Length: 428
Image 1 (cartoon, one colour):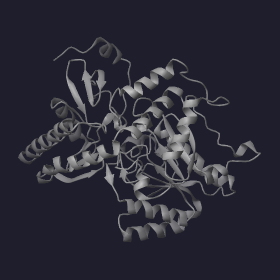
Image 2 (image 1 turned 135 degrees about the horizontal axis):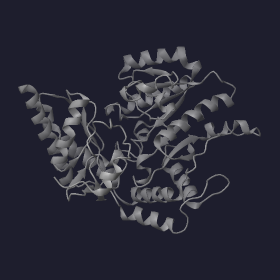
Image 3 (image 1 turned 45 degrees about the vertical axis):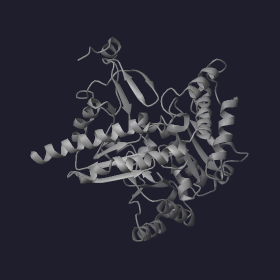
Image 4 (image 1 turned 30 degrees about the horizontal axis):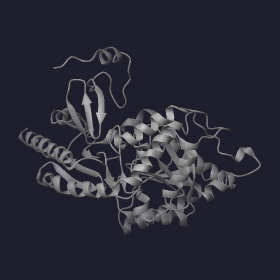
């Protein structure tokens, strides 16, 4: 085995890794470079990235248009506070986001990350009703298997799970309901809302795909109906499109496929093409106007130090250029067709429960535990592929620019490894 680089060996004594039990976690793979859809390791190996660095690298690594935009911006203004001062990249980005978002989302609040974008949405929703003289509307509706972030507020709208159990006493109680799947469960959902609506500020939903909760899909009709019921019961509809936004599901935003405009929309991850940390919370004029008053106590008092960072805004503007200039939606359609074909053999494997594909997302759900998934992860590396299966799903969510041959290699590795694992499982 190739020696561990000095920087990794010395730094590992001080680093604290995410989502990892540091006593038992394997040493991470040292990446020294990346390009397009490939990661270059210190030992000379190359891995095809099948999950786009946590679903963010939509145009591939080191896209020259984005890299050039960051470099150009860095030569003039790398950062400036966003309170009392303004800079062109942020104002231009806000204008462009309002233009491409679902109709009616006219106001853009920038923040640092997806979790904070959702936190801001929650604060907007609660204070919206407070400003209108309805302080009792301070709860949220979320859905089982949802995930909206790791901050305290977002953990409060992510139903209790293993990764958040330690903080159960710190989070406040909201309404965690089953996501409707048909007309009968929708009727039950509607009946439930009738009883709790007076206390609910907003409903938070990942439209079309629940990501970290298991890559669970639901129809555009369900999204549209949930939105309609929220409007009927005077509940703000908050769309968490941190993961689904920017073409991942086949349309620029998942809300577009459902034909709806949420009251509040959260975006992140692909906003900068994965090259910088940036997120945004978009709101309708109705929401924004409720904060306008001579009384400063009615203003939204939130402001991350690095909100609207010029480098990140430059990257985001460059990313939007690419969505305008290059055929991303067509590429997503091609990925969907290829994944449907290439992952189909998994349906014949005994331990496979379901194979599902939506846009540039492919999922193979198997009879397995998280411990099983930890054992499978290094097997994909041996095949020259970077995947990070979790729970009971192996999923593919590659850069939208991935080549057909690369996607074929990823899919073949899934079929091979799942087949072998299923056979070993049956033998034991």
